[in-house]
Image (cartoon, rainbow, N blue to C red):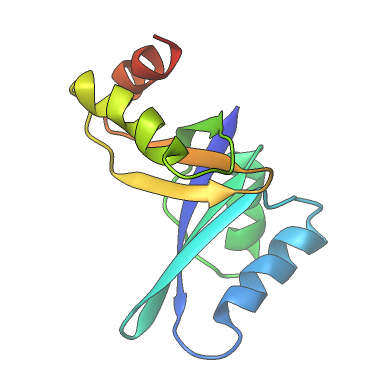
Length: 124
């Protein structure tokens, strides 16, 4: 099962590096990552297999993050239109997304407030 963590770090040099170091030192592999600057803070999303352990490692180092959330991970082909094809099926099922980014191995990470609907749309 894949989990996404939303982590807020101080903007500037080293904040995201610290997240990578903390998780690496805890033996937690980051399977995907996305981030953006939001003024005084940066928001980082990381994809991990064990969200609780990742959150615990971050908390132990004084880095706060939101509770882990379950996300869907879909392997896609690296070619034009592939992302749109998958997302169209989800949109046509009436499922709203609130998270999307790429992970290692050309995988699309997708989050929705409607997790069950998202799963049905992906598998249908």
